[in-house]
Amino acid sequence: MHLGWALSMFILLVHFWWWEFGLVRVHPWSFTSYAFLVLYVVVLFLLCTLLFPDDLADYSGWRDYFQSRRSWFFGIMAALYVIDFVDTLIKGKPYYEHFGVEYPIRNAIMVVLSLVAMKVRSERFHRAFVIFAIVYELSWIYRLYDYLP
Image (cartoon, rainbow, N blue to C red; front, side, top):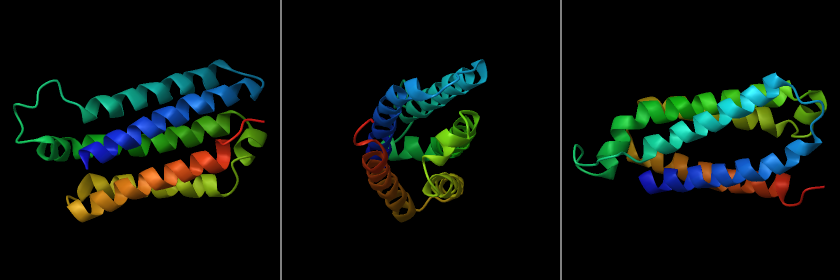
């Protein structure tokens, strides 16, 4: 699971930097939009730092470490999808609407699954969630951003 979430974060980071290229078309830019962008980057950074400890000696392994940080990781992940939604709204109605109806549903599902993941210790649930997150994110990236107009 740990490696799955590390892969998922890598995909989110690649998606984030590809998405950055498209922001040149967002007009007008405001400090609020910029501040949300910075907040988004900080949250991504926090998620990445939670995946890799400075020292694993206090834990029996990666699984034990991940489970001990599970609530923080998924709580911050839920916040990431809320921040993403607000950030998209701030950039204006045309920008928001170009993502289609799937976008708010996607974010709501990821928030709900993240909140559930904070409480559930089931390996089966967490494996299914990380596989779903990776496959869906790759699909979302391909469908939205395979080519920049």
